[in-house]
Structure formats: structure tokens, C-alpha cells
Length: 214
Image (cartoon, rainbow, N blue to C red; front, side, top):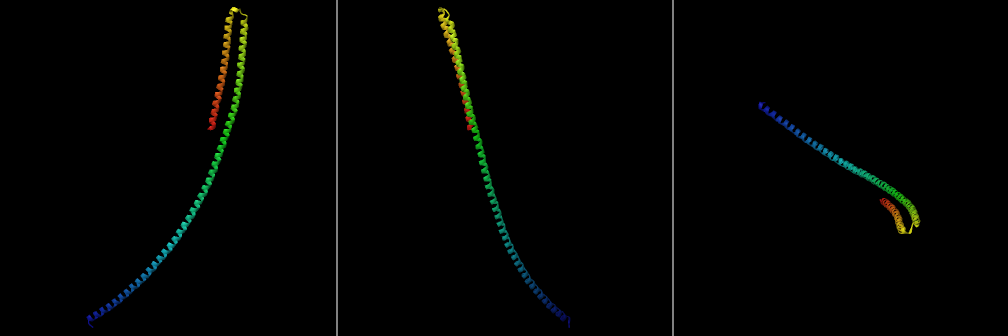
């Protein structure tokens, strides 16, 4: 057999071997492709299942979270309303107690003012009455003294001579005028003292009335 025949025979064998290798390679690629598709499909199915499970679990957790939050908020609102009601009741009770106490204190003060005013009015009235009685006694005594002086003057002038009668009458008239002036002056002083005491009492009474109104 010549060299050419050997070369051709070897070439044909190599071509046949290459075809077999290529066929085996293509079959392997097809098998790997099928396996990859199967694995990819399984992986996608796992992803979808995991995603569905995650979504379901998340919805459940969100629902539970919202439910728990609503319950907590409800408890807080209930506590707030209860605390507000208790605070309102305590505040109302304290306000009533405070107003009652203030009313009692004001009533006591007014009672004390009225009692003091009545007592002072009685005391002042008694003092004024005593002052007027004493003043009347003093004026009466002063008038008696003046009358006695005038009687003494008249008795003293009786023994004088008739030519001096005119001088005696003039002196008697002057003595009477002086005595009357002293009596009027005493009455005027007594009246001024009584008016001054009345004004002082009226001013004190008006001051107490203003304090009572306050």
C-alpha cells in the first residue's frame, strides 16, 4: 500500500473520530442545557415559593403589628381618658373646696367687721352721750356760777348811793353780757366738740364700710 493510501485512510479515520467526538460534544451540550433548564426552573420555582412564603409571612406580621398597635393605642386612649376624668374630678373637688373655704373666710371677716362696727357704734354712742351729759352738767354749773356772780354783783350795788345807780346798772349790764358771752362760748365749744366727735365717728364708719365691701 502506498503512502497516499495510508494518508487517506488515516485522514478518513480521523474525520470519523472527529464526527463522533463532535456528536458526543453536542449531545453533552444538549444534556447540560436540559439540566440547566431543569435547575433554572427548579430555582425559579423555589424563588416563587420563597417569595410567596415571605409575602404571606410579611402580611401576617403586618396584620399582627397593626392589631397590636391598635390595641396599644386603645389602651393608651383608655388610660388618658381615665386619667383626664380623675384629674377633672380632683380639680373640681379642689375648686369647690377652695371656693367654700374662701366663702367661709369672707363670711367670718364680714361677721367680725359687723360685730366690731356694732360694738364701736355702741361704745361711741355711749361716749357721746356721756360727753353731752358731762357738758350739760358743766354748762349748768357754769350758768349757776354766773348767776351767783350776778346776784352778788346786784347785792353789792344795792348799797351804793342813787347818783351812782346809772353806773351800777351799766356795770350790771356789762357783767351780764360777759357772763352770757362766757356761757355762749362754752356752749359753742361743747357743740364743736360734739360735731367733731360725730364727724370722726362718721369717717370711721365709712372706712369700715369700704373695708367690708373689699
